[in-house]
Image (cartoon, rainbow, N blue to C red):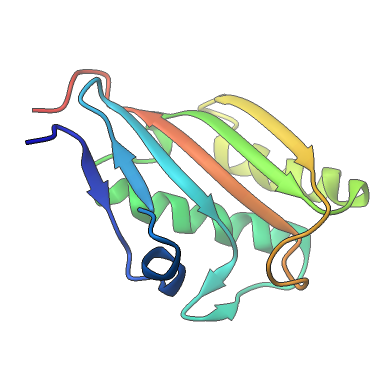
Length: 132
């Protein structure tokens, strides 16, 4: 039996594409898949700042399922479609993580599956001690 814990949220693409929203490894590392601002099948928030906050909230909900939160985040990745959004996405990240200061990357990509999306985020968190 595997010591890897997998978290699903019921999002339609999890089943369609065969992935977990989050995976917790026995060493306490939790990897959260790419999260966007899609909530209940709709894009929540129009601009880059709002989409970033909503996307990170999707990631935080996945972390909560394994008993972790924002303070446990050690790395973030932000994928954006336009360089003009750097400041707004960065502002949202700072507001959410200023006291945590995870390692972070922001990468410009050509687009997402829905052209209305302007940001997707990934999160890695650490439990601090190995999972039971």
